[in-house]
Length: 293
Image (cartoon, rainbow, N blue to C red; front, top):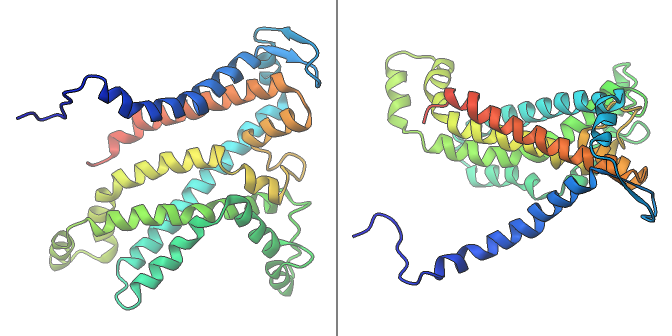
């Protein structure tokens, strides 16, 4: 008897992992290597001349106030998206865990938004917040508030945060609901018999047991906010007004595809990858210590 899988054919394991290795090589290692090489170059818009400049692209970025503004916007935006999506998902999961009649339909409706593409979710919220024809500005005008996220940076940030978080709530909901249903009911019932209030039962029993799920979702939501919200920002604010919603991933696109500064865009993508890897390592190094497995 063997505790681990044993293959009599020595070549078979390499065939089994080959598809994943090929996908990783073609869609991650190769593009990342090209971006790293291109970050040391200055090219003209038509690709006729290329100059190797070493770290000049990185030095220029680190001295650019607009780039540091994008860093600040990205961290603020990512924190708000992750917290809002996780808090609302946990609240909905706690409610769904207690629903008896119609629970299947209730859970299905909550899962549906995850099937919506980010850009479609952005267009839905853009229509609802549109100052000219949106239903939400119409209701707010009844209370004397003039909503216009095209000129107000705080309102623009609110739109992109809500649209991005709404898209991610369903994903978080699935994991939180699975985590809640895995908690033994006997623990909660014993605490209730001992006189613990619902809030105390949740905070001292349920939430610690959910901490592995919450930690996993924290990492996933931060990565989502850094990389996968480009479509939301592009469809709603285009990084404006000014640069108030221009995140790092949107600045990579703007400088590379609109400004045609390919060297700077590649350097930004390298820095963005380093930031996300560093954040993930920090989360596993320090936050995971407080997770109860």
